[in-house]
Length: 115
Length: 112
Image (tube, rainbow over all chains, first blue to last red; front, side, top):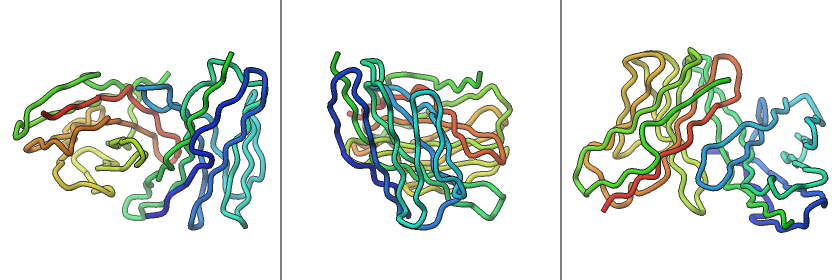
C-alpha cells in the first residue's frame, strides 16, 4: 500500500530555531495531513492540506505540498521544548465501497527541542 | 471536543488468552479505526468500520477480529494472543466525509 515517508527520522534543535520535516509519498492523493504524537500517547491532528493547495499556515506551523514531486514539508517556527514529539504525515486513499477512506501513515520524524 | 477513550492504558496477557480492547467515542462519528504501532514500522491499519455492524480489513488483519454493535463502540479482539502481538494499539474515529482522525490515548499490550 502507498505510504508517506518522513525525513529525517530524527531531528535535534535548540529552542527558538526552526524545524523542518519532509514527507514523500508514492501515488496521487486527495489530502495530506500532519499529526503529532507525544511519547507514549495517541496522535493529535495538526493540519490538513488538500491536493489543490500549495501552502497552508496554522499558528507556528507552515505546510507545503508539491504534488508534482509527491512531497510535503512541515515547518515549525520558533520551536519550543514543548514541541518535542514525533511528527507523522498521513495520506488518504478512498475506499470506494462506502465513500469512506483510509489513511496511510509514515514512520515519523522524532523531534527533540533542547531548552 | 472529540473524546476517544480506550479501556486500558497498559495490559499484560499470557500467550493463548483471548484479549478484548475497547474503544469508545462520544461524537457520533461514523468511521472508527484500529491501528498498531511498532518501532520502525509506524502505524499500520488492522481493521476499520464505517457503520454499525460493518467492518473492513486493513493492512494487517491476521490474528485479529473486530466488533461494532453500537455506533460509539469499536472493539478489537485477539482470539488467541501471541507474543508478536505485543504492541501499542491505537483507536481512532472520524466523521464522514471529513478526513481528520481523532485518536485515543493508546493501549500498550504486552503478551508474555
